Length: 519
Image (cartoon, rainbow, N blue to C red; front, side, top):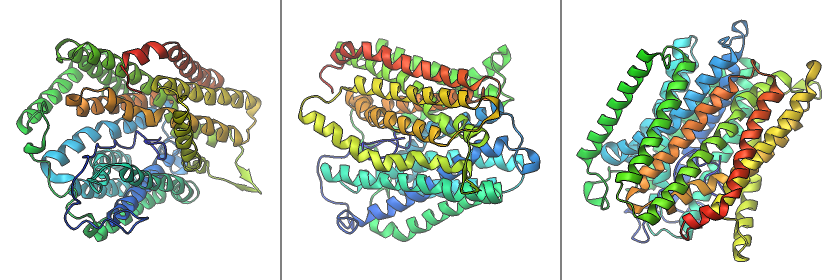
């Protein structure tokens, strides 16, 4: 997933806005890593190793859960395994919000990143142990640790550049190359160990990667100066932002409402919280309810003027499109990963390549094509032909759907038990990467521009909810891998994505007018 034209993913974390000017932080060295502060190297390698651990474990997750018990796996069916996969992906995004809040109000970004890395490592090492209990415990720890680390390490990168400007943007581009490198290497190392040697050894290797990241983070911490050392004080809050006490009250009240809603749903028999599938259904219901409640409140009692309400409506449209996009894109680690194992001929010169190796393709393509897309948008902008944000969203959805059209053809070619070339998946990932580069960088940027300045933080939380919902839907869709003919399954995903993209294309001009000059 991408976050800027030269980076990996909006899903990974949000870019914090930087102040327009100001002196460097005390003790902060301003040169030393490709002409950038030496602290950038510390954060670069921390992020690289964290992504190594994350994408390494992700490449194995669905394969391990669906592998037969006699082969060391858990023996789950595709529906149960995919529901767990979806819950895990959704949890990573949802915990980013409280993770950022804890750092801002209580422990500071520096300690949040450290504690998050330690918790992530413990999670991987828990999964390295035998037993379903340690598996679930490991997933929970990784979700909690990622929620602490991801939003705050990006915020610290922004803190290295108090002057803001183009140099800060370049710093983020370098930083996010760490994500791509980690995401590329991880499936090759962790995937090989897990599939070819022992599943738990692969999970343990992911944990070792995180430990290496923690060690260099501690050793290189001296280059970070005062960045992220202290929680944000109340006097730095802008007008309209809630004070610490009110934020805590709202958070506790919201948690209480969620718990109560879950209890009511269970008693009414709407959901079954005792199964992964039931939990996934409940999670999706709650996210949709919260999103509807938020948008309804903002429209009716948010104190917005007419122009702000129109822009909020555009954000609502983008929310739906984002959820649809990630519901398809996140098939990479679930249904497409299963397709690679079950129906792809992976033999190369007599050696059978682990199916998890194909999970490196997206990162490799991002590294190769992100600079091309960044150049393309700039080139088109100079000629006043750059597509608008709605047009880019439309293009991203159509490209995603086209990738699944390729998978329909690949599925038809597997009739009679045949296995197909991995190039089918490579072509699909290429189209998905193009879609990602068209849509994902636009998401965060456009939401921050369209949101009323007093509600940007809330809007970013809602934006993460769209990605969380997409992951939940992805898990439920992938759960049909064994129950539905694959041409029909992939065809349905293709139809929804392409259809949504074409419908959005029809409304590009009205949406541009509603955006009120925001490009």
